[in-house]
Image: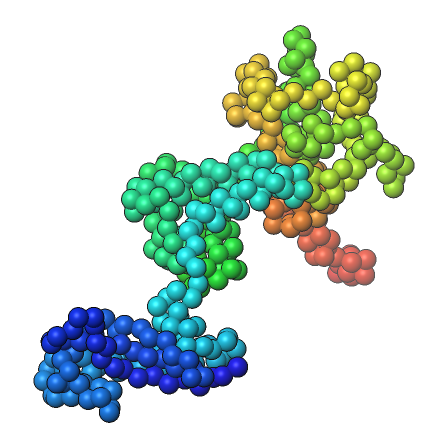
Length: 420
């Protein structure tokens, strides 16, 4: 592979030329093979030095032209040096294409986004979830809206995406689409994912997210207090559908299972654990990590209640779980009947398990994290919130330790008695 090249400028005679200006061309030669490129400039033959391949005379206009040609020499040299360092094949054609910016095919950003979504759709159930695809499809629509509103474009060259594009998109999400900080952060995460795909294929050379930081803070996870949970447990519901939904919700409060996890729970997932008692052995729908949960007496009582329930028995399901929409709708009714002012949704159940049921009763956060199927304990810290009664218990223990350290020993007590 040759690494040497030559470069010269010359005046090219156009067709039907009689007199006047001639265009200046640049000839790049590698291994005796030349490639010609127009410089976009012209010169009178009388002002051109054929031996030096440069303009002559000293007028201001000629000096500007000479400076421009020198700039092209530097640019070609820089391209050659970069290609040599990258061990690329150096030919007159490859240098010419680099100079013209045609060495890489133009890739439109929305095409990349659509291709990624199509691949995700083809892999549903094999590494991707329908809700994930739904979120990326919404993101694609937002990017389309952004390009239309701010750039009047149907698509954009990936090479034109920069830091200003990224920050402008976040502003568009917040100001035009009315997204909350958390929702905007989710869509920015999707954008970053597609841009990483572009960087991996070298369609984008500089990361436009290099100096960008997502500012959204995680919301405090709301949960039911012990008193609120007991109020729901002890309420006598005469309407079967409300009683069923209440039982399933309470079961999740004592196991930490999400809606998706309890919906797929079968009796085959329940077996004897290391302590000889019944445990749930399942994998989390969201994280696809294993989750082993000992069944507390209240949770056991609920599933035994539905062991012979026909709809459950027919499908070998543990509990009669309805659609997520219906479950949350009925939970709102339950909240009204139980006089609970918090918005009651299925999301509250794992939060309640992590706080009121486990952490509030001195279960270590590492144990809670394992039962919830989290891969990072920081995720558990978002779910779990230390309660005032837990703080009170811990401080009471500390107080006792301090008192024990400062209390007089047996010898000190005897000495004190003799002193009196």
